[in-house]
Amino acid sequence: MKGIAATTIAGCFALAAFAVAVVAGMASGNTASSILVRAIIALVVCYPVGLAAGIVAQRVIQDHVEAHRRAHPAADSTGGEPAEQEGEDEEVIVV
Image (cartoon, rainbow, N blue to C red):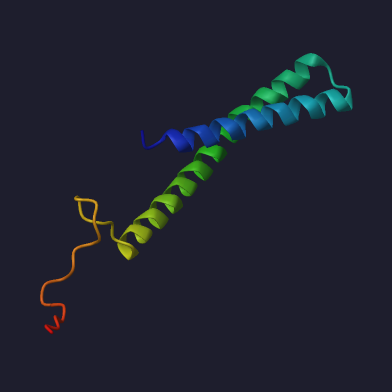
């Protein structure tokens, strides 16, 4: 489950590179075979680039989430406020 975001980003990079290569090849008037060969090369080259970018992005997000969790601890399991530390007694005034 951990690598799903990285592989999704890699797939998007690769497909975007393929689409750009096809459109650029058609716009320049190249033959269909040269367009497809160059588009497939772009797809194969850009997949590892996207995978690296996805791994970096996933790591940055995980580090940010962990830092946020450390800075803002969650409430206890009963759903109430975070438990108070021992030794902090509330002052009670009796009238």
